[in-house]
Image 1 (cartoon, rainbow, N blue to C red):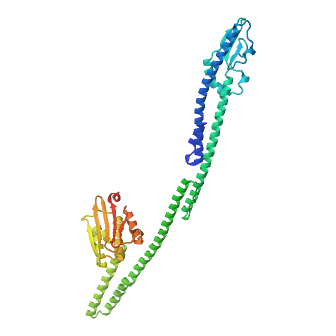
Image 2 (cartoon, one colour; image 1 turned 90 degrees about the horizontal axis):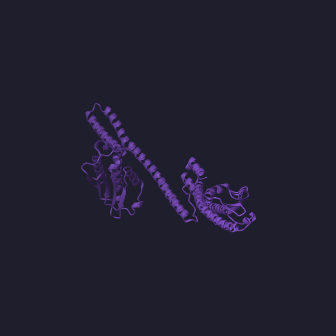
Length: 443
C-alpha cells in the first residue's frame, strides 16, 4: 500500500496536487508506517507470549500424563480435551499433528503462517507410553492464543482507523477554514490585478488570518496611494508637456518668427535701396542684428531641448557653463566645487546627471529665495558625490515637497543607481545630494 501511494506521488506532477490531497496522502502514509511498525512489534511480542503459553500448556500436559501413566488404565481422549494450548492424541489416530481446520476459521492464514515457524522450532511433538502399550502424543495447539492475537490485531486496526478518520476530519476542518481565507485572498488579488484597488479582506476569528488580512489591506492602501500619486504625476507631466509645447510655439512664433519676418523685410528694403549705398549699409547692419538674434534664439531652444555641450565639451565644462549661465540669468551667486578630472560616464548617464543639476538649480531659482548656491561634484573611493545646497528659506516638510521637478530628480537618481537625499529645515536652506556608485554603473 505504501509503495502504491509513493508511486502515485512519483507519477503525479506536484504542482497539480492540491495541498489538501498532499497533506492527506502524507498523513495516511504516516499512519500506515506507524501501524506497520506497531503491528510488527506487537506480533513479535505475541509470538513470545504464544510460545510461553504453549510451554506452560505442554508442561501441564506432561505432568498430567505422567501421573496417569502410573494407573493401570490408559486415559481417555475426553479426559484430556480440557487441557489448553496443546493437543493430546493417541499415536496412530488421524490428524495427530497440526491444527484442526474447524478451529482455525477465525484466524487468517497469514497470521498462522507468521507464527507457525517459531512454534515448529520450539515444540517438537512429545510421546509417552502407558502400561497397556498405548502411546500418547503431545503436540502444540495455538489456536486459542492465535485468536486472542487476532482480536488484538483487529482492535489495533480499529484504533488506528478511528484515529486516522478523526485526524483527517480535523485536518479537513482546519484546511476548510484556511482555504476559505486563501480563496478570499485570491479573489482580492484578482480584483487588485484588474485595477480594483478598493478590494479589502474582512477580519477573521483567527489571529494568523487577521495578520494576513492586515498586511494585504496595508498593501492595497499603499497601491491605492501610489496609483493616486501616479495619476497626479501623469496629469502634472501632461500639463508640463503642454507648457513646454506652448513655450516652444511662442518662441518660434514670437521670437524666431519675428526675426525671420524682419530679415525678409530688410532683404526687400535692401533690394529697393540698391542705388543708395548708405541705405544698403543700414539695412545690412539690421540684417546682421536679426541673424544674431535668430542664432541666439536657436541656441537657446537647442540648449533647452538637449545639452549639446555635453557631447562636445564633456561633463566638467558643461557643468561650468550651466552654472555660469544660470548665475548670469538669475543673479544668484553659484559656487562650484569640481574635481580636476571627473570620472568618464556614458552618454545617458551624463545626460541624467546634467538634467538633475539643471532641475535642482531651477528649483532654487523658483522657490528658495536664496542669495547663494553651492554645487559640488567630488570623486571619492569609486563614488561620485553630487550635491546642490542653497541658503534659502528651506522646506517645512521635505518629505511632502514632491512635485514634478522633485519626482524627475528622484527618477534620474534612480537611473544613476542612487537615491536622492533631500535635507532641509525652515530658514536653513535645502541640501539635495546623491552618491553615484561608479563600479555599478561600469558593470
